Image 1 (cartoon, rainbow, N blue to C red):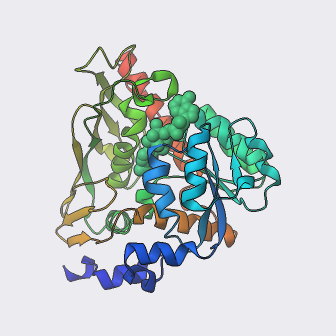
Image 2 (tube, protein in one colour; image 1 turned 60 degrees about the horizontal axis):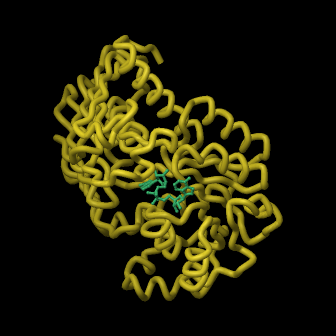
Length: 368
Ligand code: NAD
């Protein structure tokens, strides 16, 4: 039991951040990190919630990359960020002059943090500008777009990573190892749900043309949970259903809630659910030697996994997941290694998203 219980001390060794940095108070850490430019220069494209509240603060904690530039359509935001993060004018771009980032040696990586419908265009423009690219989830709207993004990065010999922060998270990594090494025996059944009540009515999450809908947004976490729980890749979508309790908001077939059954090799079935209407957040894996439960399965911290092998929990503060993710990716780029979560991983999920929507529309089983 104790072997899987990872102590805080061990976590400090695991994290890519130095243990000394972790012992500093957040303000002390910020001050310490701000005084020097560490590792690769990152430009954030799109200064909305995720860039503002998570990624920019995380880039003050990272050891192998730093916030070097911004791309925004809003002059007010540009001014505020310039002052807050001490960003020089020459590293501030808008959506029209973005391509001239090609000539900026301060920027090594462009991180696309825009609504999903814009990921395809900006990832390709960034790759063609000769920059490594990090792209937020969901990778894009279609598998075709994902493939074109992967090709553009390959053609320009640049790395492409998808912002699946949980794949850099120690509890997630530990429960995946338990499944993948067969410690729970044969997997029998999987159930994963990821969703929250979104009170907004006019955000891109409620607009189909911008990449809205629960399945694209939170559904990719449920799909990943099912894939991780099964320890393999699905072969078919057996059935799927989309629904809404707020048809005045979720219009034209946009899903507020999606439920699906995925089939994995050996007849293992996974039920998944995602929603903008209710708070759901778990992974339950029934296996030969017992049950693994992860609650919550996705959150910025507090991921907790319980199984007959013991409990796994890592104590860290927000935005450590994002810092771990960006440090892992920056180190891999600096060392010429493959990305831990490459474009192909985003493509895998978008193929499943497309098959789920197809199954929901047709009422048929869809082979992957
Ligand atoms: P947001 O709406 O808060 O920000 C989007 C940004 O894009 C804004 O700055 C907005 O001005 C800009 N933008 C440019 N053109 C736009 C257009 N035509 N319509 C709308 N906005 C436009 O969104 P967010 O929550 O920051 O999400 C951005 C991306 O980050 C999405 O892909 C989302 O899925 C992802 N995200 C990931 C996580 C995670 O945990 N990995 C968490 C939140 C968001």
